[in-house]
Image: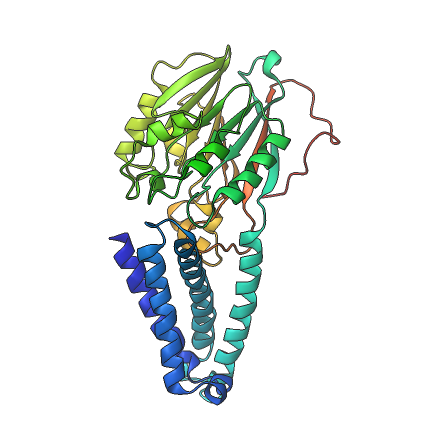
Length: 382
């Protein structure tokens, strides 16, 4: 169903974009009507081939087709958005009729610049963003524990082994005590290759490598997902908790089976925390949970992903409607919530305006001395 909706949206956007672009003076001078139609049909076919061939077949051709098709999806979205803004400014041809074609030409130019910026930001390495979190129940002996959190890697044909190898090096350079993967590790269309699995196995940390499932782990993937994580040495938390050290509990829940604030997620949360031991509790959830879901549940730190921070502006406004905690750090009564923008990208390898990120979280016992400014990584304001 999602594939049909996406294809319909691409078809409508492309029909609209080429219809309006045909009136731009520069386009009319340089490209004939038949050539413009041919270009549009070729790009539309490339997107369809990327969807049909890319996710399910291995090899260089599949990788190229999916990369080109998904990149065109992002370009199409940005060009359509700027074109629509220009049309709205000119009253869709009813106002400023003579200026309309020039405005649409300017919209194509602005959209083209945004596409270049988005590609540059999407293809660059994710930044390591550091935060210090003080937990009242954390024992003094665990003060300074470092968690590296990665969300939404979307490993597959587009983001493959070379990209993952660079991320593993980033993580290991931070010397974390624990690494947590917040879901959508795999794209989910097919079982990951042996090279990907071997690279994942290079992740190591004294307190282990832990993960929760995201929605993409279930997309058309009939393999044993839990077995895949086990092969990579990653311990999966499915509505359960583990005491890593006396006074530090790590819990993980499934949120891919229903709305984050719905009954399914509520039941998952209850199971994940059932019989939880004392101490500071860190909860992993792929999607952000609403404030009322975690209130009075004994969760000290909630780590989430899924939203990608909107990934491509202005799409974030729509995502923010469903997930008010779109990205960044939030304080909900006694719970600190961190929503990661994700290290990878879904669909187009593009981001506008924020790059991907890896969260570096240092846990502190309440009452401990503030960290040294020299030792701390610079934290950006959110």
